[in-house]
Structure formats: structure tokens, C-alpha cells
Image (tube, rainbow, N blue to C red; front, side):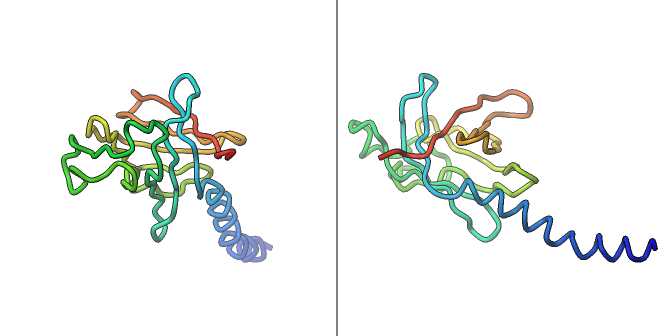
Length: 143
């Protein structure tokens, strides 16, 4: 009897893990980043590079910033255009969240730990160090 339960468990584990990964794929695609007042800041694309989730800035909604570059970035992103910049790297699937990533603030060049998850139709991005951080809401673009 125990052998039957173990066999059933071993058979279902791959399906459970693929189901969790499939649920995590719901974050893929384009998102509007929002400031603290709910105003759109940028259009971002989340995509997979292997099993790692990354994000790039597709468009800045503030027309005065559309030619901006990442002056303060301290790596290969320095002086690169913000539009097209890969600013989220290293996120890996963990149940219903993407964790252990890094996010760069292209205005300051500061880099933070990050994770993200879906809360209904809203994508939540938490960035900071350890327990200290900020959470921002992202929404699917409507236009």
C-alpha cells in the first residue's frame, strides 16, 4: 500500500511543479508600471531567458525622458538608452512568486533585490534590501 502511494506521489510531482511554473507564466508580457499615485510611468515587457524571468523597458510615457540614458548605471548598462534597457534580471519561479531577482533604477543607477507576484489582475513588484523595501503595482496596458 505504501509503495502504491509513493508511486502515485512520484507520478504527480512533475505535473504539480509544471502547473506551478505554468501559473507563474501568467506574468509574461507587457505591463504598465505605475507611480505611487497610479500614473503610468513606463511600459515594461517581462520575458523568460531560459528559466530566468527578466524585464526590459519598452517605452517611457514621459515624452521628455524618451531619449534618456542610464547615466548612473555602474555596469554595461551605463550610458545605454533607458528605452530597451534590461532592468530586471535573475528572477526564478518559487510557487506563485518570482524571487531572488535584481532590479536597477535607471534614474539613480541603484540596484535592489526584488521579487514579484500576481495579486488578481495586478502585478506586484517589491524591491529593496531584506525586509526594507517598497512595493509597486503594475497593470496590463489598456491601449
